[in-house]
Structures are given as C-alpha cells and as structure tokens.
Image (cartoon, rainbow, N blue to C red):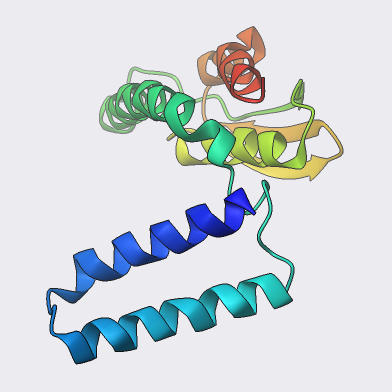
Length: 156
C-alpha cells in the first residue's frame, strides 16, 4: 500500500512540475490521468519495492554524489589517456563477484560500472559480472571493491 501511495505522490509532483497550468479543468484531467496510470500499474502488478525502491531514498543520494565524483575523475583519466601518447591504454577483461543480495543491487552495481568512463559491464550471470576496462588501473579500482561495498550498504 505504501508503494502505491509513493507512486501516486511522485506522479502528482511530476505532473504539477511539468504542467505549469493550474485551472480546475486541467487539474481534473491531470488527476484522472494519474489515477488511470496507478490503476494500470496495480493491475500489471509492477508496484513493488524493486520497481520503486523507496527504502533507498536518502542513502541513494549520498551514493549518487560519490558516483558523480568517480565519473568526473574517470572521465578526466580517459581524456588524458586519449590525448597523451605516453599514457598507457591496456584493455582488460575481468570477472567480479558482486556481494549484493538482490537483483536491484546487482543491477545498480552493473549500471554504475557501465556509467563510469573506461569501464563497461558486458555480462551478468547470477552474482558474477564480466567487466571490460580500458586500463589495468581501472580494473584494479573495481577489484578493490569500494563501489561494491557502497552499493551493498544501500541494501541494508
């Protein structure tokens, strides 16, 4: 029930922010469209903690800040390696064990690897992630496990 409430509130907020028109007719049309959308989502049985992970709300913000910093640093590193003929590029393929316990956690881990420049998660089987890294140092960063640890802390 709480997921239905949060979905409805998120849709109302999103609609009000995007609409910009607050006449009674437009508000009624918006309310009706939100009710129909929530009804369809409930009938499809997609309103659950995986589709709407409200338990991550405040902790995910801190993780996004950390990930943003890592993306910026990786982007700078990749650009330097492309522009400088002296910096080594050593494509590496590694297999990582994900310590996450839920499909949501594993998906978040794989997507975080992919969004970071210089690394791409190319296959996921169970809790094994196959990752292509542009350099051995990028692969080492993943093998050290800081990203894995931070995402596992989100699941608690």
